Amino acid sequence: MKRKCLKILGITLSLILVCSCGKVSKLKNGEDAVVSFKNSKKISVNELYEELKNSYGVYKLVEKIDDYVLHKEYGNEVTDEMKDYAKSTIESIKQYYPNDKDYLNYIQSSYGVEDEDGFKEYIYINYLRNKAVDDYALEKITDSEIQKYYDDKVVGDVSASHILIKVTKNDEMTDEEIKKAENKALKEAEDIISKLNKATDVKKEFSKLAKKYSDDTATKENGGDVGYFNKIGDNVMVDEFTNATYNLKDNEYTKEPVKTSYGYHVILRTGSKEKSQLSKLKKTIKNELAEEEKTNNKTIQIDAMTNLRKKYDMKIEDSKLESQYGNYIQYLISQATQTSESE
Image (cartoon, rainbow, N blue to C red; front, side, top):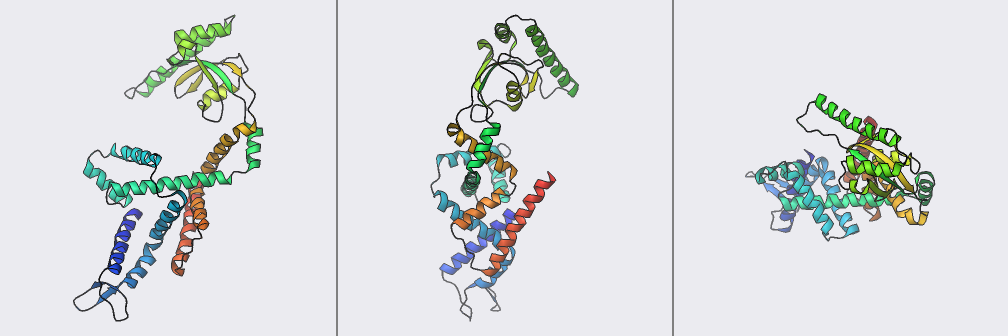
């Protein structure tokens, strides 16, 4: 609903600009007239401005402000990354609206744009807003926070091998059939652990069993070896797998199957390293903390844009709109806080 209002407002403001720049009739007091009637009644630009200001003006004003400060901060160039972001967004919507007419109707009604070019501009601004939030979150991270994270949470890499038993199921199966398939996979994983319990050379036996039973085609021929990984950074595993591995000692294996979204795993921890120096991990830790900040701070999007507007010394000259802007920001903060409390 809000986007529709903004669309109408945008068209009306455009009309004002056209009228102001072109040939327009004048009222007795010198104001431009936007509309005239047969009985000589006229509506002035100022009257229309006051009406718009009292209704939807602050929303459109914030859009115009953000368009300026975001392009001031990041430039006007549309990067390849922005184009890819727009392309993936549009493709995801077109999955549900493959008909061009339905797609156009959707973006017009939902985003207040005229066509796909207008929608791309909307997506680009949204991309820059996200970038502003990312940068703001990074700026908030202090060296002391990085040091504490390093001391408390950073660990050295570990390496592991695994045997994966997938749960064979499909969308047509009943809950009972799915449960039976899960139990079957669980039983197979438990049987593998039983075989390992009897082995005199666990590492050799594990490799043999992985080649024979594992459903992970990418690792089974290498005895299930997944190499080294960590809890943070680019080389990470799913949480359940990671936590189970770090709870083992070198050359220990899990005594119970570990369930993940992939199925049931039997895991052998094969090695470990000392954690890297802080200087090598500082950027990675900072990114991790910034992601935590974005997750935990429910007003961060509001804070980031408010901060960026202040950076460019934004001042709303119209006192009524200035008051509305302050109320609008407080409303957004209140809504974000209430949403976080109800979750």
